[in-house]
Length: 369
Image 1 (spheres, rainbow, N blue to C red):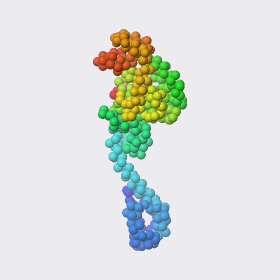
Image 2: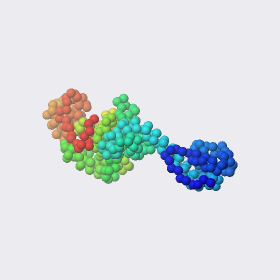
Image 3: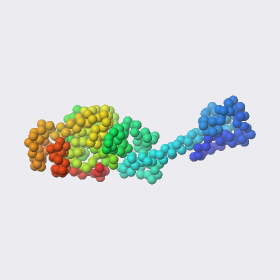
């Protein structure tokens, strides 16, 4: 009679092979085994080949017929199926190694969002953990990241969808660390004039007050480093029904782009509620053209009041001294006025960057486009 033994192996060996050894030691044929178990031989054949699993009922029958504990058979079956699953996972990890660069693994590691590893398959596992998915192929169907892949497919000058997804996930992780009050629309609307006044300050002066003021309104501000290939200036989405996320990345570090992007994203939060994820890269996402135009108008009109701007444009004096005087009159950074005039065609691009301000940020947020 065969004795009980435990078999542990990384090889995918079906327990049917051990069963063949056991009945051979007993001098029993497969047909006799089937008769003793009260089963057709054709039903046992897939078990010998590993094509069919040994169930608890089958394990108990084998215990009675061949004298090997049901626990042994179930353990062997479990190890076999686990070995098959590991092999399938390893094959999948090898296949997904090609996504490490598109998902900007090195950039994520620099920022401490994933571990610095050497083994590429382990990197894939770490990236799966970062996104909270079983396979990286699932990232594109997760609601939070679908917008990244829609943007990448729809535009001629397409962004790297994988990089955008990593960038959004980074914002999600960082935003969870920001303590916020529940979202308060009225409080946020009342804050807008104060935020506008911050355009006259340096980042050292407004950085902390800006984030704190928005957090009081239920908006988590994330100043995010740039990821190559994202082409993104900012993004807006909701982490919970009571917590909005406003992401900004510093591309070129221009003050006017920073403030326009900030108020553009606030426009989405105030005008469009929790209807979607908005990613800004200078062109409207599919199906969001109207909402982008509304957010643009919201930012432009709030930064430079329309009546004052119209009167200034009518005077047609766009010399630097006149622009500075007008900016002082409406109490905004002069570079914001320059950016608006260039956007509207009153100043040519070759006018250069006169009066525009470049911000100096901390090392983490300084990445260039």
